[in-house]
Length: 151
View 1: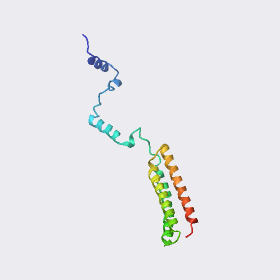
View 2: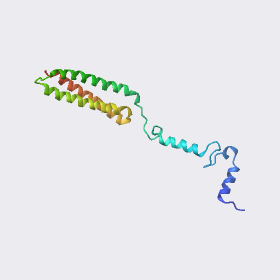
View 3: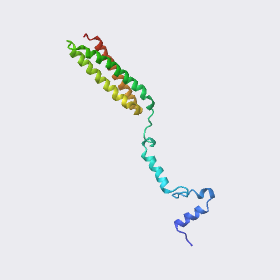
């Protein structure tokens, strides 16, 4: 009597050693329901932090340090604003206005990079660190010209 393919596979599994009988492909254990397995697989694919192809965020702990850099820029600009407000109708007010606008632009560049840095990885992280360094250096140069300017 000839067996069909399904019967032959079933017979092979039943004649296998006991530790292999539970390893039938495509068959679930009684303790695991299909809805439980679907929920587990759905939670894995919906959570981008668990996706193996999604880069790990390794710089989140640095956020306070970068916020301090931004705060120091804000403090320096606040002092410059006080000096700017005291100027009144000084003949050099236009030069101070231009320098103050440049300070705000450099500060915006720092703020943009500081906002992105903790979430970046790899080359993007290094690029944003470089941006912060260059923006802080630009702010320093503006402050040098600000201090050299006569009121």
